Amino acid sequence: MSDPTQTQPDDSALLLVVDDDPIVADSLAELLSEHGCRACTACDGAEAMGILRDHASDPIQLIIADLNMPRMDGMELLKQVRKNHPQTVLVAITGYGTIEQAVEAVKAGAFDYLTKPIVDREILQTVERALRQQALMAENVHLRDKLSRHQGLGSMVGADRKMQRVFDLVEAVAETRTTVLISGESGTGKSLIARAIHERSGRADGPFITMACGSIPETLLESELFGHVKGAFTGAESDKPGKLLAADGGTMFIDEINSATPALQVKLLRALQERQFEPVGSSQTLKVDCRFILASNESLSVLVRDGRFREDLYYRINVVNVELPPLRQRGGDIPLLVTHFLEKYCRETGKLVTDLGDEAMRAMRSYRWPGNVRELENAVERAVVLSPRPIIEIDALPETVRYQKPDGSPGFRERRRDPGGASAPWDGKPLREALLEPEKRILLEALQANDWNRQQTAEQLEINRTTLYKKIKQFGLEELAMREEPTLPTPAT
Image (cartoon, rainbow, N blue to C red; front, side):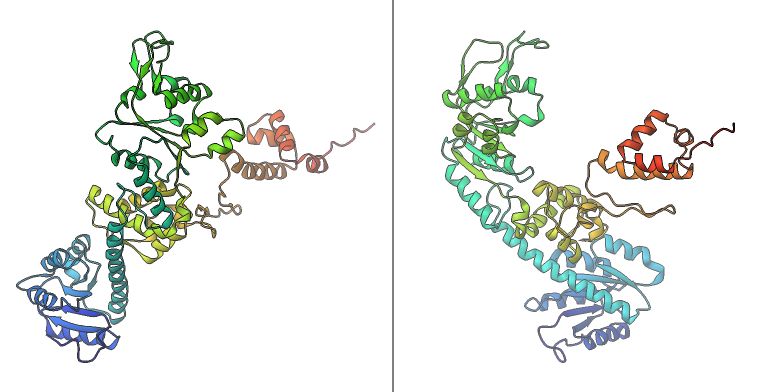
């Protein structure tokens, strides 16, 4: 084994070259030493494992190992490294005849593979990329440690001061019976906060019942919450208890309360004040013992001002207001959240994905996430499923993130230009509005191709003349049409 400490400073990367051909091993070690690394060698996997154990205080950062070796081959070495030294990166070396084996090694967790004979430029580029991955993995360990310190509220993650204040407020109100209003944009985690309050309360052993007003037809909202009796309305063929009765002894979480109908608001106000209600179509008063948590993705104070939400109900539910910040206001939590969701979806899919590459992480951090944490979670799940390597590259991210605009808002790849002219990228307009410009261009080109003969243009476009006239007027082409349309010659007299 060569001594890695003779020629290089202690703070340079420590690499291990493993090959049963000493000439290959020594030449690679010498090349790496000439380019600023400390390098040592081993003749097989068994010796390599001994060296890894001996360097516990000065860990090996990267291993370059031949796959075909005596005693312990490269595949077995890879398994042992991943099990006992997960922060060490391994690059496989193979002959041209065993590339399939090298591909299997990459699937098993190797960073990459190189084929013999080794080209200096290729090995140096691969080592540079692999050391970047090793640095990312070290940062990932730091993030996991940080994650464990900031994940004390169910599955909520956040080191940002705004989120820490939210966590503190949840802990303060959990043991009380106080009604809580959770406000925040869609996807910020309002339902998770509601469940965390319930699980920290004295009602944790009771039911946690949820109802989202925005996902239920207005005509069924009252029945869904309060229940109904047989014959209360068309289709009510039997008595049905509502969600509020099911929440007795526990917590009733009403999401999207901003979508509640005026009639539901009236009955809900009484339920909040007196803890009693009547099912739809019944005169029987039922009592319930539950804690109310409500959530809104709109400002209720604005809705009150605009006359779209009852003022008395607003003041009744706005006892303790937990405001969740949008993800764009706590960008420092993005790496923590990425790590959290990476671990979650690796467990669910069984895939071995450890980190995001530099470019992918930069894109994630600069994106504004209009869908908040929910959108980020979906992006990570997609990347885990699509990534062929342990490191997620930017091409595995959604198109809106990859091609985001300079301000971090969603972007899309520009469409290919066809031979007939340029096609502008979609700029976020609704479909009907986005289709107007190409429709106007097609109409104008058809009119010009037919020398502004409207009858011929209508026939070619397979529309009637009335529709054509309407389109000309819609796109402001009347003056141009009148100027350009040919006139019939005056008949000879």
